[in-house]
Amino acid sequence: MATSRTTLRPDLQALLDNFTNLKNVYLALKTFCNIQDELLQYEKAKSFKMEEEMKKMTKTFSSLEEQRKKSIEEIRKEKEELKTALLESRQECNHLRLVYVDRNIEDEQICRLQDELEVLKAELILQEERHKEEIVKLERQYIEELQKYKTLLESRQQYQSKKQKHPAIDNMSNQPSAIIKTKNRKKKEKSSFRQVHLVYNTSNDKTY
Image 1 (cartoon, rainbow, N blue to C red):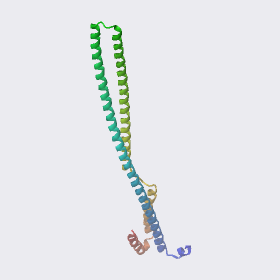
Image 2: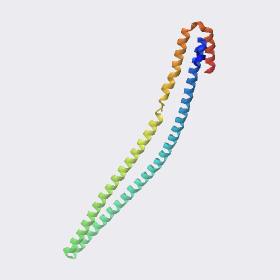
Image 3: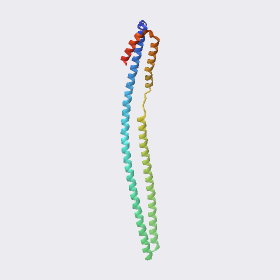
Image 4: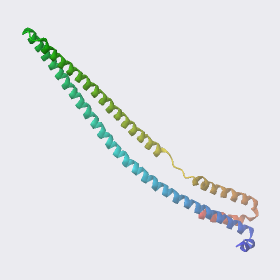
């Protein structure tokens, strides 16, 4: 190969060198296209998987929202029932107190009714505190799930808007420009071979 290179005329040697460079650029671009195809298939699969996860999370979020509303409604009804029971107990206690006073019933029975009323009041207070804690817990869970859903949605939007660029792109994209600069420099240095360069340029146009 070294002997054949020394026997070529300078114009033919330049043509051979440029053809070799064009061949290398073609192979590099072909490799780059294959890499881009693989990246595209990978990103499509990843995007499809993320979309499926988003659907599952949306379904879970809706289910949690329904459960939260149902729990709050049940707590509200239970609280109303306790208030009604307390009101009825107070009315009954007042009525019995008046009856017992009118009939000179012993104070011990009245005290017992009052103690029962106090116990009922304490139970109502405990129930209200427990219901408040449950409501706060449900609200916190709801906010956490909502924030998680929002964060995942923002992450997906940023991911779709961001362009993925392979590191080999810069090196490959600079090769054609370097070859063009080399070709222009040789054209200026070898102006005596205009006819050969005309044939060379025509062959380059066909190759592109």
